[in-house]
Image 1 (tube, rainbow, N blue to C red):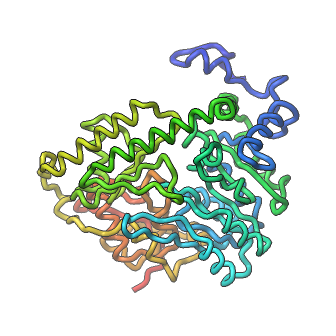
Image 2: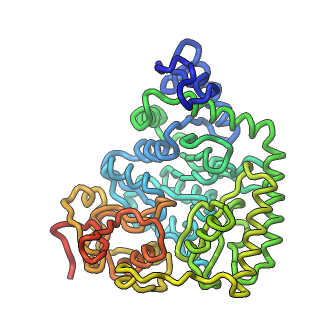
Image 3: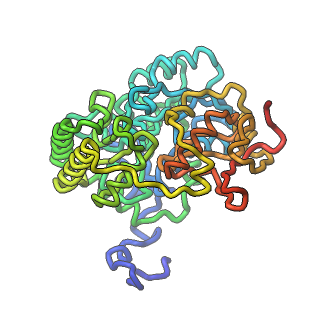
Length: 472
């Protein structure tokens, strides 16, 4: 195996076929390494300042599942950042964990969530002494960096392990001028998506472990459970390649990255309507958050015009901002094109040369009028009477029209994709503000997962709820 025998067929490039092998003699076994992968994973650990590192070939998802499963016994209690990726919830479901949430602070001026704070972690651990592990996200999808060093000290003082989903921070700590990564800051388990912010292929990631709070044999067991028994040598070669590139050329690559990004921000200061999240000590370089509240346009509309008229593909859009991501893979042309595009668009907005197209009224437009509701409603509006998640996701559900769902309990995850952070978790009570905000997302053309369009019933939208439970 594989069946192509390292010959190119169809559109398969010869270079890919050449390195697509399996565990043949001389090429070691990822799940029981004795030679090649022992050395390669040691190199990754040295690069990031970890005691031990593991290659991941199904992205950070496999790392999150393995980390949480190894850190806690079945039915254990985890303190979880509410703005974490859905893979963390999947781990909690599989292990039947009790969840307590860290609700991220809100940067109301920018309508985004900040990273959780040490003070929040301290307070939560004092209130709930049976917590067995802490899981936080840093950087967040919008680039907000937590004080992991302070959080680690608090968590360790309780004798607990700290898990950091640093999927969007694989570049941190690798060069002068960049914040330290969570391995360097003392976290016990750290997950990096090398494919997100480094020049590596999709699905490539790393899991790092430090200290003695995690049983490493148990961790390896879960890595074997959650990952394929036939790991892709193409992807593993990609991880090896990126670690060597950073070791050999990282200083120059990151210097150019930092210089180009700061020069772009300097030039964008000329914008009068478009605003940008400032680059400061707790904001990750490379995440250009384009704030649209002062333009009269939604983040989705700015995203669309940049793609359709300027041929620039951004990372994601939300109601009040859109996000462009930069890495060492972006050359001078990328910075020049997006800078000129944003300056041009800002001038057009100021002069009134670009206006919203006259919408043709449809059934959907008639039913759902525009509502100006903050993006952060979900992650600031805490559900006090939720059904435990691991229990709720197994309950019988039914579809309910979204306009009639207030008071029901969510039966499925609902969220924008990207970034894959749940707005509603199964078991959380649905409020009127939630329904209004979801309808506004739909009206703005955002990608809402967990909501279905029912064309047969007056063009209404439906949401899955708990079948037998509803509050008045």
